[in-house]
Image (cartoon, rainbow, N blue to C red; front, side, top):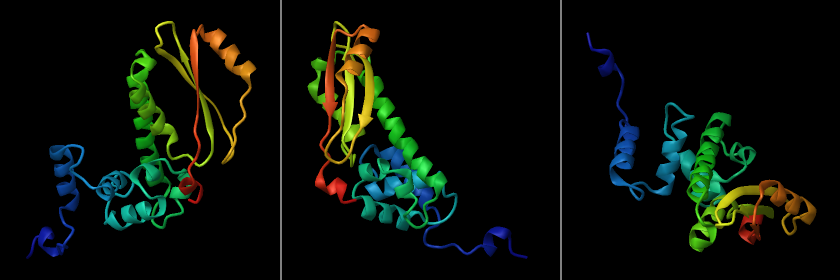
Length: 191
C-alpha cells in the first residue's frame, strides 16, 4: 500500500516557499524581487497555495512595493484574493518600517544628518494621496523629542493651527521645531 506522501501529487510549486525563505535568509536585501517579497509577506495570511498571482496583482494595482505597503487596508482588500488577515500582515510591515526609522532618529541630532531625516520622513509620507502635516520637536541639541502627526488634509491643502503647535512645544520643553508637509504627486492621486 502506497504511503500518504506518495498519494499526494507533487506540483511544480512544491518547495517554492522553502526556496524563497532560503533566498531571503541567505541572500540579503536584493535576494528577492519585489513581487517575491510580497509573496513571502502574504504567506502570513495565506497558509497554502500560490501567492505569486496575488503579489503581482497588488504591484499592478499599487505600482510599487512601497505603494502596496502604504495602501489603505480597504483598498488592499479590493484586490481579489486578499482578505483582512493578509491586509493586516502587509500593514504590519509598514508600521514596523516606520517604527524602525523613528527609533533610528530618536535621540540623535536631526540636523546632523539631513538625508537621514528625509529618508525617515519619506517612509511615512512618500506615498500619501493627501497632504499630511507633522511637527518635529527638537531639544537644545537638535535631537528629536517628538514627531507629532498634526493632521491630514485633502489632495492640495492641510490646515494647521499655530497655537496648537506652540502649545505642544511649550509642553514638551522643545527648543526648536521643524514643520513638515508633503505634496502628493499626481500619480498617487490617480490611484
